[in-house]
Amino acid sequence: MPPNERNPCQSLTPDVLTDLPNDVIDSILIRLPSKEAVRTSILSKRWRYHWCRLTKLTLDRSLWRTENNLLNPTDKFTEIISQISTLLEGPLIDFTLDVADLESCPDIGSFVYFVLRNNIERLVLYLPEDSKLPTSVFTCSQLRHLSLDNCSIHHPGAFEGFDKLISLQLCEVTISSELLESIISHCPLLELLVLHIPKLLDTIEIDAPMLSWFYFTGNISSVCLKNVPLLVEVSLTGEQIMKKDLDFAKVFNSCSAIKYLSLNISCYWGCAQKKYEAPRLPFDLNSVKRFDLLELELVDAYELSLSINLLRSFPYLEHLEIDVFHEDEDSGTEESDKLKGLSDVTFSHLREIRVYAIDGRTCEMQLIKLLLANSPVLERMLIDQRLLDLDTRLKVFAEVSNYSRASPEAEVLCVDWMRYRFF
Image 1 (spheres, rainbow, N blue to C red):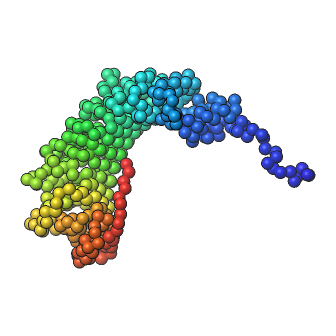
Image 2 (image 1 turned 90 degrees about the vertical axis):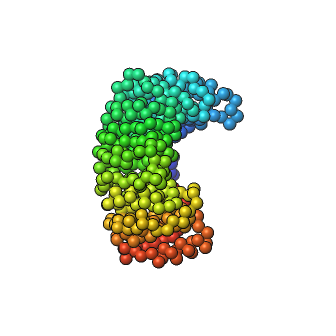
Image 3 (image 1 turned 120 degrees about the vertical axis):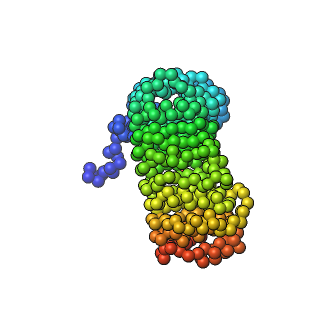
């Protein structure tokens, strides 16, 4: 065969993998699960310990859980971290440790301390239930992202703060209100705060001048957003906010930049029973463009009045989502004087409304009627009818079709729609 007709495949180097540049090998390894990355050691001498220089490492059950489970998982984990402690060359920038399935981790504290010495910037820990967080975490001043799951956090003693931390996520943790406040206030660059704390907390005060996103789920007496001038997105979806004299003004007083607010309104039923007047903010939040009302239980005129009073506080609202929650029976409330007093409200900028999981009760229909009648630039209302039988669907559709609409362009669609939201 003439040279110019030779098959190009024949000219390739036999061991292509061995001749790959280091940055290409790194790019391959960082995309593999840790177990598979370690297995590349058998490819050649050059690959043998290359995984030890990875800047990103994830250790999880795939490494110590085998098909036959002949070796105790805790013993296997101990063996693995011993090998890593010997071979790891660093710097390790991104480290995830998921040992939530282990009954105990006797060497976890010393191993975390070892890892933190490698200039780590992102640390994710999933620990066994009720495990105590190693105090060495609080000495890692170079951290930029910290996520802790399923552990107990105690005061570290000498804690100077996380000067570089920009995101903090605490999920299923046990922590005191005082320590939580202290940690947050010692993160001057914090931009993202995610709290999922099921155990009851006292009032917490959020002092974070650079904070942009705050998501809270759990049980708490009250929240005070004290110094958050850059906060643009807030989600408060706690199971119960217990304080009976909850002050909405203290919650949102310094939130002048909020654009997206998500609120589990059922949180406030315990603090504002029917004998109290439906609370209203003493000021407007002009920056709010989107508002999500979660688990709104529309049973009588009080809940409806509370909802409208909240909406009054967002004069530039453009997008509204209401997720209806059903527990009590429909009271069959007629249009009372209290409801007639709400008819003067106008939603001048509201363009889209989505109402999820209605069952056709009286207050739900009254809310839909009021929104249609007082939204002059409304473009679309979507009504989720998945919980309705055929007869109720027809009844709801006929009733809504007869409601007056302030916007001649308003389109009302009844759809079967399962709502999914992720934070």
